[in-house]
Image (cartoon, rainbow, N blue to C red; front, side):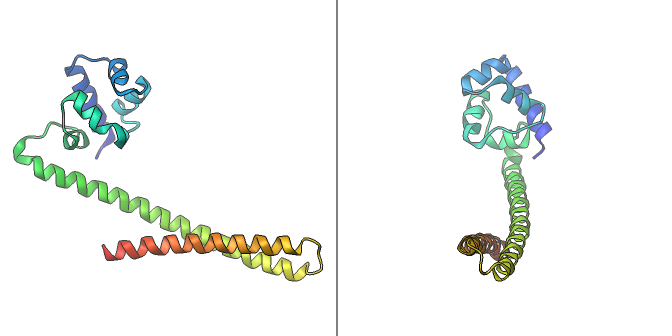
Length: 159
């Protein structure tokens, strides 16, 4: 789904309805800046207002996501293409989250190991209990990120 194509389509449909950006924005209870961002391809409508937008423009969600009027003969094909594109985007986001989780998890585990080393060096320090508490918190966070990334990877492999 190309943002610029969708944006041009929104602008075309709005103009066909003889509406200004401000009028459409008022009907959707959003700012005209949001409409401008969509129409210039710098953003996409939020899923929470897509149905309302489609109703105002007299188009289907499938047409909105395709950025064109769809003939009945190709409607199912376009719907499948849009679903596949959305699935690809979701997979990209999952992979990014997974990589970030592993990196963050590794960093926190290294911090935990460093904390253990500091604990052994400053064993007699008055704030030793603070180091231990911090170490437990860091290890818990690391485990959660590693667990989250592992669950996402497991789901990706089994879908």
